[in-house]
Length: 336
Image (tube, rainbow, N blue to C red):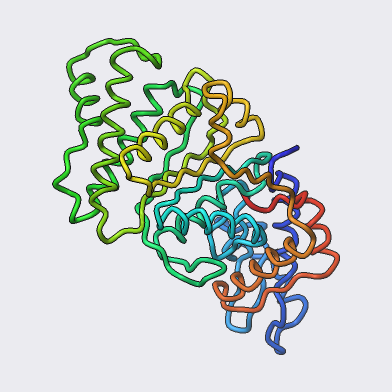
């Protein structure tokens, strides 16, 4: 399936916005509204007259963000998925951690869901069902094809150190895994980066110790949320499934069950997880995202029009035909 908000859609959206400024001043005339700005710096740019001046089309605010993560204020649909993740967080808060996996094609809204739930976990947005506010420490990493087992551990350790440093009561903690990594890299030591070898396993054990120390010290927090985006990109040799499985088991043994793990990626992510640990997929509640329905697409367009009206300072409307064209051209994949 093609990317959300394809190039042809961007061009159509620009044309729609160019012709959709509504209710100009009564004194405006048609020639004024279609006035063309002349001059060496603005030749050929169309403007819209508003009585005391001309608003350049190029200067109009466009609320749509092609190929970018959708912020919570523009989010539409996915209610069932959001409720599922909320329940995972609430269960984790009470020492019964549940983990989730968001799978779907590119541009369908996986990263946007993770962003929205980051706000929920931090207490910036209330949960969907209970309207309660949570207070989790969130760790957010994104993986790539170049990441091996060592790099995955390093990304988690680095993000853990960053978040701990941001919390006043946790700043005194020394993150042993990252400290160990830093000393190795500073010394120019070359070692076996594969899972099972001595050095990476030492890093993994230290990372588990760091997680335990932080989780047992979270007096004012509900727990920790680890979000891994683009999780499908890492090769099976990176052992992402094994990392998730072994970390959760170790935390259970040490009675530190307040870590929730959320993954997002293309549908082949399940094969990637199974390749490193057959039972790792059973850790997660899997949600397979489908394209938005027409009502949800309409909600996205309507929200965008309201935001454009507020920020442009004049009403912005769109015709029914244009709305239908946007739904078709966007292929109902309106969130990244």
